[in-house]
Length: 97
Image (tube, rainbow, N blue to C red; front, side, top):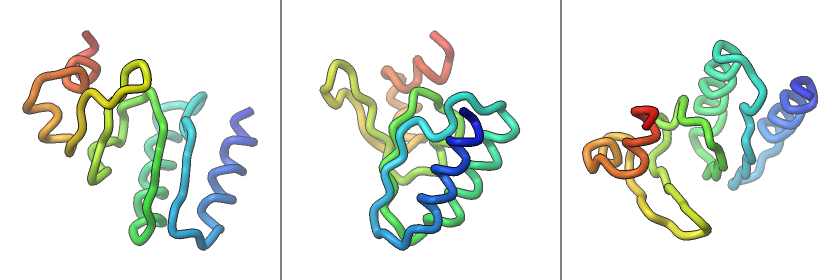
């Protein structure tokens, strides 16, 4: 499963599309591999729009805009720093509450 996930990420990186959709791209990866993948994604996709769906918060500080949803509704949005400062749901997730 991990190999398939890595292959899917590699294919997304090789496509020259202006928009990249990633659904749980680091699910099932260990913390070290996850950090490496997120760093590579950040570098390779600088000039692209990336929409990443994730329940894992590692690496989200690299994104320009974070949208937090609950039951299909947007409940918070902003940068990592702004969401932490608001101390809402994103903050609670980061604190492990």
